[in-house]
View 1 (tube, rainbow, N blue to C red):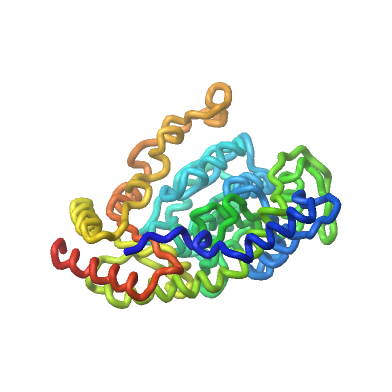
View 2: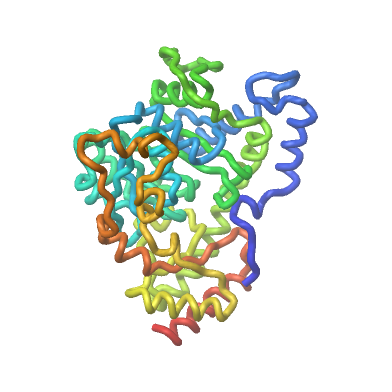
Length: 395
């Protein structure tokens, strides 16, 4: 199968180039002032919020920045713990650590997403928030997660970095929780190279996000409470990023339609032939990846080899290892004195390899094939044929 760039990047074209050129010709790449500010970031934020069904959206510099800003908007910092799923990219727990809090890890189910029933076990008197992460386009069971979080008194920050456009029971992911965080990095559903978005419905939380991302400033106070200023950092999105992101957002529906058509064709042919990942809402799947979940690791390894021998690029997500096994997380190593924030509680923070046993058992069994909106019918049939041949050979 022909190798394609990632979903948003594969759609970069004249529109993005012309929008960026407009900013350059206006000599105003900073969003808040210049000789001729075009308002590209503000327009992108408005359109993003409208598409998501959220009251507010804020452009920032990256998906990780979106998480940090969201955490600080929620008042998360030293003395706090935040629950993250065992299956996620390192940026999720990393942002918690950079915010001065400590990540604790919640087990998953066979969707590879957070198991709502496991949240309570990860909660103690220090826990202030939970970050569900819809992995590779597949939505979490957000209704159950919200019920459990509210029962436990936890704030909810949705990390939708990998899955922009996914939904659960007709509602956009990123619009369930107190705040949402999105990424515009190269791999993502839409891209500006780097960039991110914070979403919120509560105006007070949103104002805190705006202030934290701009050194405590509130340059556009319309519709916000006008709370007290506090020290923040600089995570402002540039007009160049906003210009590209705005054009990419206009293409998101086309990207989603193409990906869903490809994935539906593959699953229709392979259902009952290969073991599929659990998807709790097929209609809400952003469909950027086709994932199989085999009964054991040796079978997955044989199937992977059979697909690669037939020219199909595939692999095991995160090497089949929970995120807490990343050495800097597991060994609790930070750039701070005495490995802060792990040193701030009376009792030690203990991570063990088997602390999320379902993740340890499930994750090594996964095998993914990345999908592209540019995949042709021939590409799709090549994937289907290769999987059927590998199934006859291995299963």
